[in-house]
Length: 274
Image (cartoon, rainbow, N blue to C red; front, side, top):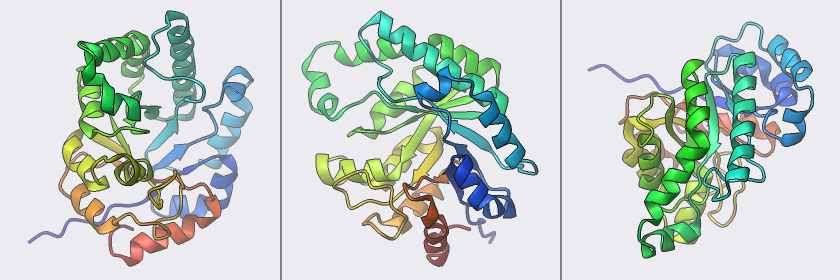
């Protein structure tokens, strides 16, 4: 009987965190999500010097590389065509950063809100109309992602039904649109808004799941704590992950980057990852 190897942990880091944790990142050529290139201020400034310094720090890194795309101040399902144009421009800027940094994955935030979970089906056609607005926003973005070999992964934020996001990603019928899971967001939604537990998100997404933010919480707020500090049941999550074959990137996304060694050590001690 062949024993499946344990997954290797990666991390979400900006340049400062990359400098601090570079040795850990390179010791197993871990997956990396770059998080310095999502704000309007950065994208509208000359971001290339920062990107060039980041590339220098990544010399020798051969792990998979992604980027957290822009998200502050907008949703991808806006009713307003002028707002959609701004969102489109921001996400295209994100993809430009991906190309420069050698990133082949970009995180995009889900449009589904807690209100949607309770109200979308109360209005005839509202679900299809939401998807149509997202397509209007992302049509050019998806085409650009396809052309440069980058995958957009849609991350749950307030989502109460994991299948909403899975269906939205599938509606593009493109290898450049897949699903992301944020464990803390899912656990918050489970404890506070009646969403299913974290492992259900994995089982329902199946091989559409290409990216996971690993962070712990108490279920009341979006804590981004090191695993072990909150109440997520990590063995059930990793059991679910073992049942899919898409090999999602497992990215520790922590508010306090100094707790990265603690976070990784906890999951290693549980025998869940390396």
